[in-house]
Length: 312
Image 1 (cartoon, rainbow, N blue to C red):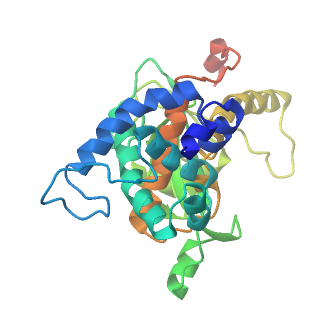
Image 2: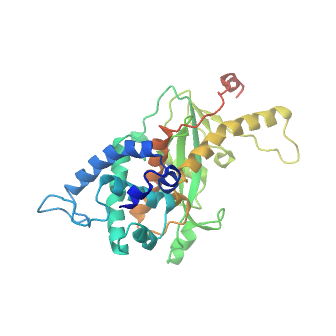
Image 3: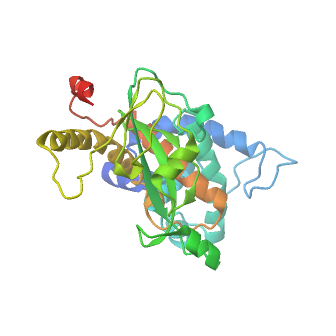
């Protein structure tokens, strides 16, 4: 029996290993199947271009079914073990595990793209619903291994996190889905500077909720909601304190969205893969997995007191 067969009937362990319930997993399988066979028409398992015969499952494959393959890649993203452990769990060698990871990572990305769950990476491709008049943006850092070159060490060292990181800015909506993910940059770059470089385009009349890390950031025809900083030498008024608490309760959705993405340990732990293209893909895929999960298990929040928007 495969590892998938061992845990498919164990609800608790299946959720712990993949981050998905059986129903969510089953809903992802059809798109994953189409993406897998589409890729295998062009590439071999080792990533080389396919020139001769069509793809057929080889004898004694450690991942004989589509469910086994999807279980394999979801387990890797959710738990992020070292490849030797991943190989031992799925009864294969470490080089073979690396081969399957290189094959199935773009397949998972294409499956989520087909389901329209991946965040936009460019403002030109970002599609937002005018009805969703409240948006959130925030920055997040992901740790990486210390670069070997001294210039890159200084570039990627984050004084805030006291380690080497890469940074992204994300835009989320009221349902906590990640709609936009900026390009990867060095961790020490300021949130506002990265937001300026992204050239946000939001619907006119919408509201953008941000924290004080974006102090001074503005958009034309977009109302900014940001907590007030305490003036030097004085205290905030009772009204300002009330407004700050209200904005914080609203802005927690942005923090929850980023936390939902980092349920995948590969987005939270130190990324051990040195390939730049892989770094770019990982966080976007984790955002897609988070967005897809919310279709089945949406988070519930108290209704927003819309009349309070008039005061801001």
